Length: 343
Image (cartoon, rainbow, N blue to C red):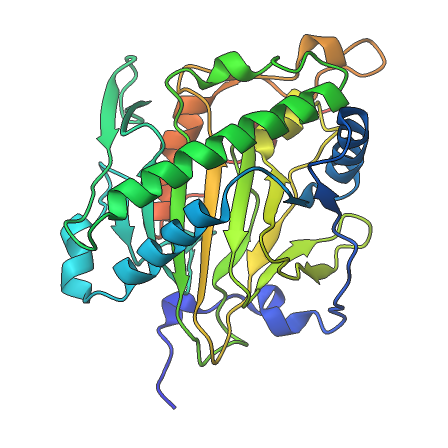
């Protein structure tokens, strides 16, 4: 057997085989979006509170649009390494192809292609004490043909669903449905194409190590291979998410946790590798403008429930995260608990 690059090896306590009690369950809620508005608000609120994750069916994103995006992703990753690296990302521009993603300073067993929903966006320079900005821009490959067209159409469709879900989550918190919509002018939302090759070392490596999503919402399309696992809030066990044909998997991110003042929690999740089959997935990360200041919303705090977080700037948070995900560093990745107000 070939040797594994040590960069991929998870510490013993975080390896996939360390939790033998894994059980296949149907507990992660599957919510039909054709239900009445009242039922949707109630079920989504309960899912956010109990799991931080749920699946949606009858969501309005056409299967043709999804199929075109999936086919384009597959064709891109089937190309030679030389061809893919023509659109390779770097520390300055985080968009494009990358095969050295790190989660918590351990390399992930995957390759990715990232693109912005809006073709370019501005983010702060983290080295600058002034309010200097840099522009990040999508890098589109020449091949496969129609790649850009298929993926831009997919992003537009899933973005509509993300707004719809955010509205229902806001209503479930007792807030106005459009409470957060203004945050997405000049948004940083992005789509990632993930390719997880078969891995001969399932006991040592992970497709993606345990992590929480730092944005508002993630809307994930996955194939039938599976591999996503969610850390159950009630007992800390890793629960496999069984692929549901045509469904999207939704999870709330750190920003919803802060906005809701911990009522809805951003939950840890990971991706285990498969020894025989490659896996593809497409997460849409719903991310606001770099200018947005994040703090618990006033309507949800009072004397009995004081704010649990200090205000932070999303753009600076995003810029820090991008640098530490790009390659292994000695510093800890920035997290929302760094802004927690201690009792």
